[in-house]
Amino acid sequence: MPNPKTALPLPSHDRYPFSTIDSRPDYSWPGGKRLAFYVCFNLEYFAFGAGMGSDVGLANPPPNHRSYAWRDYGNRVGLSRMLDLMDELGLPASHNVNSFLYDAHPQIFERIRARGDEIIGHGRTNAERQLPMWEADEARLIGEATAAIRQREGKPPKGWLGPWLAETYVTPDLLKEAGYTYLLDWACDDQPIWMNTRSGRILSVPYPLEVNDSPAVVFRQHTAREFADMIVDQFEEMLVQCERQPLVCPIALHTFVVGQPFRLRPLRQALRHCIDHPLAAERVWFTRPGEIADHCYGLPAGTLVES
Amino acid sequence: MLQLPHHGRYDYSAITRRKDYSWPQGKRLAIYLALNIEHFAYGGGLGHAVSNELPQPDGRTFAWRDYGNRVGVWRLYELLDQLKVPACHLVNTTVFDYCPEVIEPIVARGDEIIGHGRTNAERQGQWWEADERRMLEEVRDKIAGHTGRAPRGWMGPWMSQSRTTADLLQETGYGFVMDWPCDDQPIWLRTRGGRLMSMPYSLEINDSPQILVRHHTGEEFATMIVHQFEEMLRQSAAQPLVLGIALHTMIVGQPYRLYALRRALEHIVNHPQADKVWITRPGEIYDHCLSLPDGTIA
Image (spheres, each protein chain N blue to C red):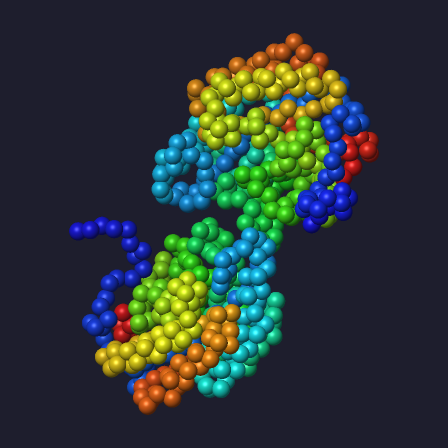
């Protein structure tokens, strides 16, 4: 539908109003910090011989066991290595979780739970996406994924990232109606923003489509060293930018991508660089997206631009 | 020995080397008419098309399909009544909500409803097993809730099936499936929970592939029906056979195609050897097969 607020003839989502980053009320993160830095793992489960999935090289015809096994490495090896790294660096983490993992590999959640990390709804499996689904089916998919987390973790997830970030026209409405307080699907800002839904507002927390090993390394075929440089450059630039606005610097990782030893090494150096930065103690809040959302919900009305 | 992947559902058997039997009253050729009554999404999903599809929302194509439910199906009911022939109806369950009027004549005529998914805007072949099972149950329960009778037969939208469709159909209470155009007689399929009957359903004597995909005219399609009938009438002296005629409301419901279809169906109904023909419904063929001694159906 054309947007009645802008009178422009183009269709618009009408989920949020336009505003420039430098025109908004100022606020800070807890303790007066200015840059909220979070690391988000993607824990994904795939179908053998069917459905969608990333390939490290050219895809073979089904069953394409080669790519399946490459992805399976992430759950078997990569994740443990990455959790070791987070422990070593003392970094909190969050995890976008395909809910089928709770039945397939329930043991992977023990360490995550012990760390006190956040679980974020991430569909049932990345072998599918919400995009072609009818509304009732999508609502059921979100409901199933949410129920699995609630059942296994004792509390429902606050946040959602759709498999392949493939939203339908009604996804934010369905997420709000399923009890989510924030979503990560909209990479349109460096600050959390309010979004309209038919059932009230929901928070959009920044999530990277660029500083993300899947698009950068798998699809754009950057090296791990280049990816590590992207993290450092993103961090350094935002560390300066955050003097004027409180910002979010998210890093998205996949167990089958940076969980490979040769990629883990430059990643360690990049994260170490961020943590050991002379300005980190003063400016950087190493956190999780759920805590960023909680902080925003606690700010005085009007601090974030109203939707 | 050549070890190609195999579905494992049935073994090879030649039509000429099976036990003989007959349809009720010694008839040899069972004919059924299968009317596909389908509902589609506006602006998305799969669907039949009579011409090039436009970018979505393709209102032109949606409306052409919608004609089938608004006009075509009523013309076809009228033709069935005029010819005094029974029929079965492959009904998407969204039809029950979208245009419930369309169901009334089916119930009044005592015709059979075959499970045909929720909508032909989707197909089940690539779904996960739990989702497919839920859809089969949803369709079964919807039909039972509206008509008081659960469907015994199934044909998937687009005849699409996953590797486990036959198993799931047997487990959710269906008795026969019409997705396998591999024979002119009913045959038994193996499933993990027991046997499921495969009812012949034509991918050839079917207006959708012939007219929409292969671009034949209504007259050509009518001639195919007549020739199929005449040849099978001759063949059925040696084996009891099933001739299914598959129709879609938005295709043969168009007047100029209906005109040709009427000629073909009148040819069958008024045929001098009509006494050898059992014009029936798949459910009645299924019942008859169940009444035969074990081992009669391959």
